[in-house]
Length: 242
Image 1 (cartoon, rainbow, N blue to C red):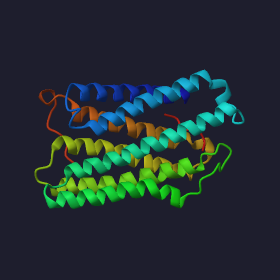
Image 2 (cartoon, one colour; image 1 turned 90 degrees about the horizontal axis):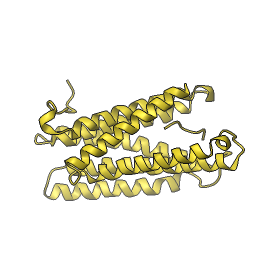
Image 3 (cartoon, rainbow, N blue to C red; image 1 turned 60 degrees about the vertical axis):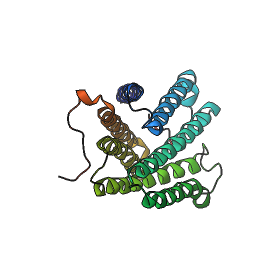
């Protein structure tokens, strides 16, 4: 099973590198939030992988200080990644809204939602070192951000469907992002109900949905002359134990 994880991680890294290359060749100014997110994903995953390789022996020991540190670093980065995804949905929703006064009011509403996402974890979840690795607040915050991003992505799709002049590239990017955040939300839900021996099931599901989302982004940013008609949303890394 460990080889499946490695293969999926390599495939996801290659897909993200492809997205980065396509963005830099083309619409990186238009999609600078996506560019920033992709860069963070690549750099943080590389840093965590390097840490894991140099401390692999200690990480496998749940009582080792290196193992506890890795878990906290992993979940702290997970919160950052989930927050970036949430904010990315907010930014794409703002881009998809109509111009004029409606755009201003939409911007205020979306800004308020973004502030709420930053504040709610501190109000809802106790901050402390709950659990053997002190990751309870981090994992709860990640769950909240993923479910919030999945719901907000539905709002984004609604805005795109209501706009007859919608940008097809933004639509495809939103589809890919929706696959990623929905897959993450489902994965977190599954982890609460499966025994620890079966945690590989939501882990693999998460990695597969992320890979699917990156593949959709590759299509979104592929040079226009080399791709077919754009998709339209119109209807017709292994987690350590928390």
